[in-house]
Length: 425
Image (cartoon, rainbow, N blue to C red; front, side, top):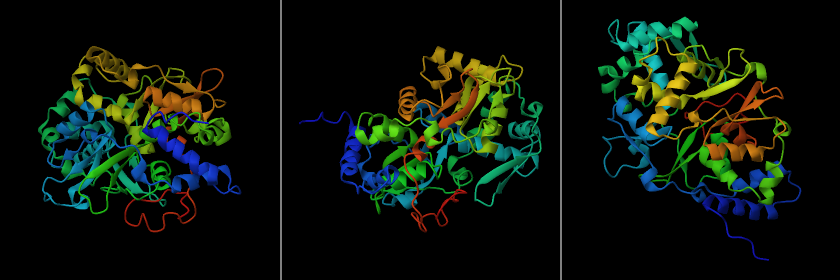
């Protein structure tokens, strides 16, 4: 009996997994079978991003230019190309880091700490010094598990409040315009550049994007001089969406969230911000708690009225004029102003949608299809009253697809990235 041809390159991967699934050793558990299947597929098989869509940032680009490039191309991060590298340089010498919105935000906040201590060379009253006074000084520390956390000495909402003209002043400053992205490439990541080789496996890629918290992974040929592909959490979830209907996927995708242990976080640990709190509080919390987004809660603190992601810092930096009318910028003000701006510019964005929610009894297949169709990175779990009680991210979903075999990575991470607390390496 003839089967329908694969619908897309991603679906072809699904059919490849299906072929491996059918011949996998029968004594393996479903989880072990999935691991085995993904271990047998090289990263080179992952559908490639069109060469014209692999955006690179030259190391001599300014922060302002970098934010504009990321925003214009609707991407969260991009590799930094060393403009001083020779033309025949291999990828190891050609690329010096990954720049992302989260990194730019963290670096600006880090500079505010230095300015507050009088060590950054910024004059009192400068935009960075003012940011320090608003956010309070903070320090980085590495926990016993290797994770970087921050501590602050100014946590009040008042400290995080800024006037509507503040970011226009910041983004028009010489500091912001003249700082080169190459100068900050190693200051906001544990690793300046972590790339997969085309011979690495899907299992390695999936573990790095989930358990090891990488949001994107450049793919290179050993000895080559260019990036062959960039694989993101979003592209993996899109691949899963294209696998709906295949037996191997249905055996996993029809499980309820609660059966898979989702959401991972207990309700009382959900990181959130109230609608009347300053928007900078949201970015403070993301930085301190190591999360990529927070729900904006109503005045009762029970229902989410919106979501602010780390990538939304772009609207503070690329469109600061939209806040001029506000005396202070609350989380609700931020959502209102950005939505109005997006509608005026006729731009599509997840910020224009209502909060996407689900329930614990929903099956993971439905969540994957929702996340993929709306192009968002997180979905909030609500109870029968509609109260928010958890969040599920792209990383959470990928983490439930595979598990790390004992000693799987060996010395792969030596000197590269810190290990997660529950590593079995």
